[in-house]
Amino acid sequence: MFRSVRGMKDLYGRESDKFDFILSKFKSVGERYGFGMIYTPILEYTDVFLRSIGDETDVVSKEMYTFLDKGEESVTLRPEGTAGVIRAVVCEHMDQCLPVKLMYCGEMFRYDRPQKGRFRQFRQFGLEYIGDKSPHTDAITIAIAADCIRSIGFFDFKISLNSLGDDETRENYTKAIVKYFSRHEDRLSDESKSRLRKNPLRILDSKDKQDIEICSMAPILMDYLSKESRTYFNRVCSLLGDYEINYEIDNFLVRGLDYYSHTAFEIHPTAGSYREALGGGGRYDKLLSIFGGQEASGIGFAIGIERLMFLMDEFFTQQKKRKVAVVPVSEAETSTAFAIFRDLQNCQIASEFIHLGNLGKKMKIADRLGCDIAIIIGENEIQSKTVTLKFMNNREAENKNKTVRGADLIQFLRTTLDNQPACT
Ligand code: HAM
Image 1: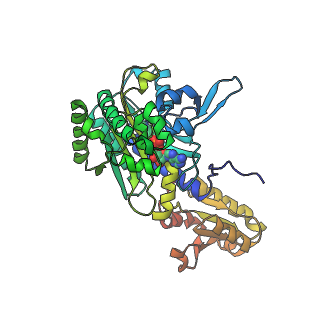
Image 2 (image 1 turned 180 degrees about the vertical axis):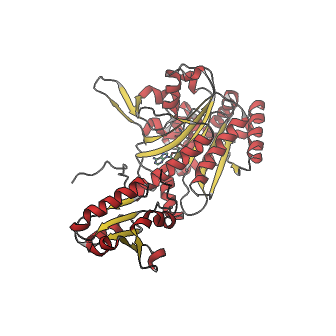
Image 3 (image 1 turned 135 degrees about the horizontal axis):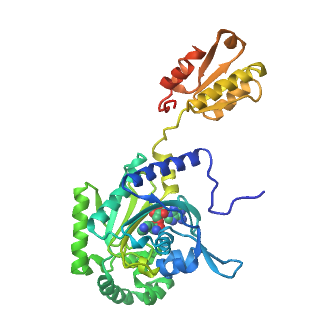
């Protein structure tokens, strides 16, 4: 038997419905705030990620799917969306006319250990607000992330916030943590020992138990914020208060990617047992210039769609679009039933035409396909120009069967099925 690659899932049926539902909600939130879609290639030259995400990060050093293509060029399946979007903004000269507001959704690839809510191929919805550096933009971007998650009916989450400050801040902070971690070097993991020399900030990201314990007593970045960075961050916090967005400051939030400066944030669920990040983002000052573009700053976030799909199972049932099955009793009624099915589709009523097997089998298929009402057409119905409706879900089960005149069918279904769009 063939199987899919470890950590990569087929999405179909209820899962793909959930995916489409989340994406359509997120896209309409993005549109409401003035963002347009961008689709970038899934494959980029490896340098795009090395230069932006940073070669000491877990994502670059351990998790990238990198290979030589047939022309011997090193290419990488994108592990995240921001680098490719900023590369595109510069390549397509979108940075000549700022601000640029782009949103995206697509597959990302990280070679990590698969577990609950963690896959090797997963999907992110993200957006990038480029070329408008002000605390208002930071607050708006965080508000959009919160609005996205609320738009699917999920409210049990918290926003963790930190500032990574400017270059001066990180320089002073790096000196302080190098001093601190050097004192504990013999207890650090081998990886953190090597990061102490190459990129000490990344030690704060370590998943090693002993490293985490040592990190908990490390100096905090907030104490090293330059005057400008502190003023900026205080303003972001007060604007979030004005927007009535709840947040808590997390002094150790450094994010797993190197490109951030100033505001950094993450969103975590607060109900149930699952506590991994649903999304995260922050401001970046250097990305555009790394790709040869304008010296402009941006801010963005990405939300992991599979993680929300997982929570949807735990916390709420999705509003399913209701549909009907058109069922001829025998071959003799097939063409009449087919004409009714076409009428329903012309009137945009979600419907299935079911004609395989005997009546019992047809009803089973209708049930399996999730139909709420079966429209049964037999000899008697054709003679009396009526149809028999069988209500298939619990809510209407007590209504039993109902006979409706053929001429009244569309009107009847419109008032019975919720949310059916009007016939155009
Ligand atoms: P990130 O925190 O690496 O940020 O990923 C964002 C979200 O993607 C995570 O919070 C999580 O929900 C989801 N995610 C990450 N890895 C996996 C995985 N292996 N399986 C399932 N879901 C996963 C970024 O990617 C940045 N590009 C966000 C950003 C945009 N920053 C600025 N603009």
